[in-house]
Length: 329
Image (cartoon, rainbow, N blue to C red):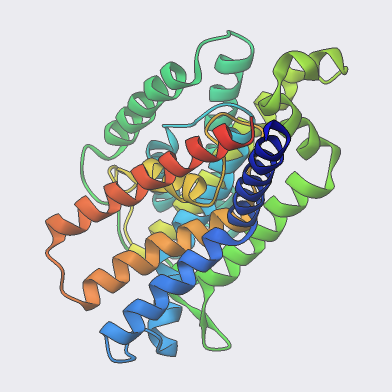
C-alpha cells in the first residue's frame, strides 16, 4: 500500500510540474488568444478588424519599449520606479530641440537617448555601487527627475515640432504605424541582448543568485549598472515615441507608465524574485494590457471600472508568479 501511495504522489507531483511547465511556456499566449476571442464575439467582429489591431499595437508601443527595459532590471533582481519620470524628463528636453529649423532630427533623438541613458546610469550606480535598495533609489530618482522636468517647463507644454519628428510617433510605413516598427526593433535588440550575449547571461545569473554569480567570476556591480542603464535607454526611446505621438513636451507625460511597464513584464512571466524572464513574453503581457483596455473602450465600460480591472489583472499575474515559483521549489 505504501508503495502504491508513493507512486501516486509522484504521479501527482509530475502532473503538477508538467502543467506548470506548460503554463510557463504557453499559458500567457493562450490567455491572450482567449481574451481576443471573447472581445471579438462581444463586439461583433469590430475588435478583430485590421485598423483596430494596428491601433492596439500603436497604443502599446511605448509601454512595450519601457517593459523591455524593465524586464532586464527585474531579471537582474531589481526594479525601476523612475521609468515614468525619465519619460517626462526626456519629453521636455526632446521637445526643446525638435522645433522646425532649429536642429536636424538626429539632435532631439540623441538628446532623448542620452538623457535616458544617463538617468539609468545614475540609478545603476546608486544601486550597485552605493548598495542602496532599488526601491529606495528609484523612488527617489522618480521624484528628482519629475522635479527637474517641472523646473524646465514650469508646467507649460512645449509644442510645435518638425514634421520629421512628428513622423516618429504619428507616421506610417507601408500602411503600418511607425511606432510599431520601433517596438519591433527594440524587442529584437532586447531579445538578442538577453538571450544571445554573455552580458545577458550575466544579468540572468546575477538575478538568479548574486552570490553564486560572484563566485563564478561575474562582475555583479557592472552587470547591474548595465541593466539599469539599458532600462534608462529604453525609457529614452519611450519618451521620444510618446512625445512625438502626442506632439507635445509635457512634464507629466510619463506619470504612471512605470506601473504599466512592470505589469507587462510580470504578466509576461518575468519573476519578481529575479533570474527569470523573456522579453518576447513581456510583449505578450503588454498586448494583454492593450487588448483589455481597448476591449473595455469598445464595450464602453466605465473608466473607473477599467482601473479596477487593470489592478485585478496585475494582482492575478503576481499571484500566479508566486504560485509558479512555489511549484518549482
